[in-house]
Every structure is written in C-alpha cells, then in structure tokens.
Length: 252
Ligand code: F6R
Image (cartoon, rainbow, N blue to C red; front, top):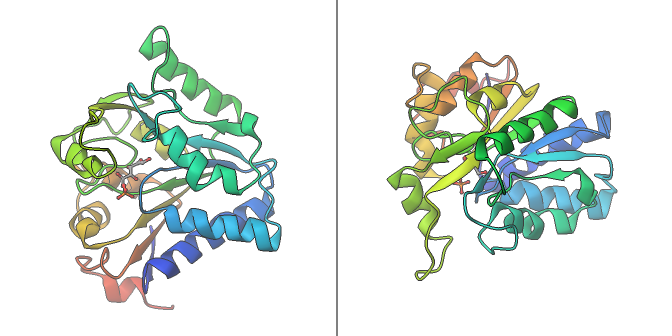
C-alpha cells in the first residue's frame, strides 16, 4: 500500500483530485467508482474546478457509486443520488446515462437487484479507479464489521455507530435508514486501482488498524492489504495513530 501523508484537508483533496484527473486524461472512458460522505467533498470540488478552468472532460467517464440507503428514493434529499447530484454531477459533464448508483427502493427481488448491479459493473469492464472513504469502525462502502471479505453487492444492516454518524445528515424528525445496498468487499477488491481518503481525528484509530493491523472482517478496510494497487491519502489528524509515519513520508 502506498500511504501519502498530506498536510491538511486541502492538500488531500488536491492530491486525490490530481490522481483521478490524471487517470481520466490517460483513459477518457475511465470506469470510476465513487463514494458519498464528507471526506471526498473537497476532491469533488477540485475536480469540478478542473472541469471548469482546465477543461477536464468527464463526457466519456462511467461512474459507479458504492452504496445507497435502503428505503430512500433517488429524490430524497439525504439519498446518495441527491448527494452525488448536488456535490458533483451537476458541476461536471458526466453523461447521465453513464451514472450508476444503487437503487435504494428497487422493485422486485433485492438479491436479484444486487446481482444486476454487479452485472452492470462487469459488463462495463470493471472499475478502473475506486474512491473510498473510511468509517470510524473501519468500514468501506457500508461493509460493516463481520462483512465477508469475499462479499458482493448486497443489503447490509448499519451498526449503531454508523447510524449515529449519519444522524447529523438527517433532520431530527426524519427516520434514519438502518440498512444500505452496498458493493461488497469482493466487489471493491476487483477494482484495478483503489484510492482511500481519510481525514480527521475521528478516523485515526480505524486507519491505523486498517493499514497496520491484521486483515480482519472486523475492520473491513484492512482487506485492502490484499490488493496490489492501493493508495491511501491521509491528513495529519487521520494519520496520527500510524506507527510508521516517518517511513511513509520518506521521499525515497
Ligand atoms: C459512502 C461510504 C462510506 C463513507 C464512510 C466515511 O459512500 O461508502 O464508507 O465513505 O462512512 O464517511 P465520511 O466521509 O462522511 O466520514
């Protein structure tokens, strides 16, 4: 794993956007896996700026989001659909037909729907670059502790901690979804390149366990140790509990 220690959130956002932009310039029809949440917001803003000011072209990029809350329709303000539209898609030129986000209210059989999402990714040729955030419990996507490291897209019940973390995003009167449709760890590990972004002190323990701890279904981001091309970008707060910080920042 390649660990990049960033001075702060702005640097983390710029560096991650730079990596994505370089991948798009190299391959204009990049298959790009995306995450919602607070962490990638700065990266999305920087990519939007590059589109506006530098002509970064997303017209052939194909996107696949990691997850959606079960029970939230696409037009629900707290859905991943609404988040992606407001924070990213409406600021760049991804073709609407190239955007894929799991449906939080699929009609019919849920297992069949999840298998279909997997099949769409396969048919597109697989994901070239997958963006990830990390939860306080070390989850990637909504692969909560105990998720099989071979899991594929499926419904996953959210932990109490994740529900608490999500509370800030919902109004008090709103019910918080207790489950999500999420790509599995196996789905994520199939991506050719993975970029994990970690910011803030609240992520420090989970990040250290993921990078320096044993591979365990209890901290699902630790499964990234099994992937051959993972870059982790962490700001100083998120990197605070890494014991090998000096080694990671060694320019050699
Ligand atoms: C969201 C996702 C989650 C988040 C994680 C961190 O699509 O897959 O794993 O990346 O919960 O969320 P933030 O960035 O809000 O701290």
